Image: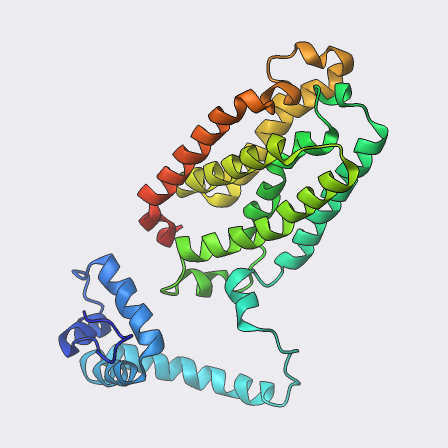
Length: 283
């Protein structure tokens, strides 16, 4: 197939094979063709003609669906349209992710408030905010690819631009909300340094995306956040002043001399995401 960005078009044979649902077509060819069809009206016209002649059963199905939807579309024509929303919002966020991002920001503020009343020794030698900061982005990442929070999930997941690019855009949107809030909060309160939590936070995010290619992004992010809380934060919180003796206390894991380990985890997670980039189209 030839690209559609420089005036060229897909071949008629390729379009005919696609219209017939040829199972021999490679998956990357199908996705490339669908991405081309989004921006190429002439090729879409060829596809419509090919469906009408080469796949009459598909054309009949479309006509049946159209006949069933037309009364509903006519009734909806008089409904007041929703308030305008820029296209970039839909490209970077799920329709109902904003309230969950607000919740994540609220959790961040709560942790900063705890810093004002709790001593670092009560959480394994680390401030309450820095002890949960590494996994805070996982709250948004878990929701960025969730069926429950995207009413158009099936439609979104079936488009040519779904998969890793869409997942990375939504993950970036989460990081752009959470990380600046933590940076500003730590700077204003002076209770935590970005050197303690920024690299671990990115490492957790990349690991969640990497594991997401196997078990699903939502499960991976939720599992990592729960594991950090159960294995690291909760024991330090419960033991209080004895937390300094815990081998997995937040104050020890977030020390500067542990940064190479977090950097290695970030590199491994990023490498796994790149190596398995094609898997995300079928999540």
